[in-house]
Length: 243
Image (cartoon, rainbow, N blue to C red; front, top):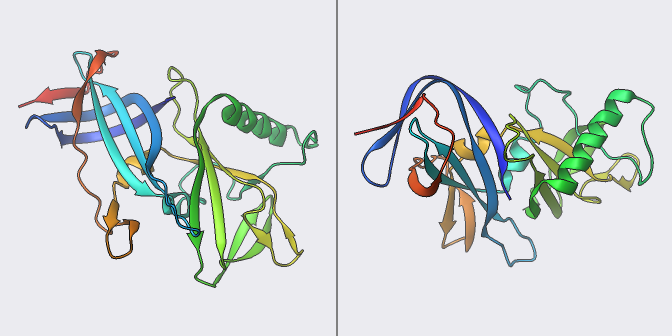
């Protein structure tokens, strides 16, 4: 399953293709489809998985091109709060099953998330582990919650929308009982936040570390190289094949 996404573009950039040419992207809007899969499913008891993100898009003649980026699930932790997004700066906490909010806006958000994870799930149970023993303050449903990163196991689900409904953000759900509220001494229920899919492409950082025996994120992103794929798409005048 894939999700339709769109990006605003500026200036002129060129991305290499496998056949030695380049895709030139100029100012405007680029649409395409993102899909997610596991690059590596960590078998350890303290797992951090690696994700592969494929982005398919059409050039000015309708030819389809695909590129794949790879990163670890640390990306979801890094972008759990994104001050650049036009949204509330806290995690959305799901109410108990069958319960609703008094606030109309929160109910709309609840319905949006429930539909996304029911009908447009892209990836399930992507795992992240940390044991740095430090504390963090999370903004959750309007209050600060102190969290200790001790034997912390997180599980993420990622959802999108229809391939024909081009959106600028995807939904991420944090599984129940992942975070423990130190002050009130109970496990926080499932929570969710939005993430911009552009981060999946910018963070082509995942590498295999033979010493660590697992995938880690390099400090330097690797180049995105497009390959031709079968099929046709709607031509986009600001995506040209050159060379």
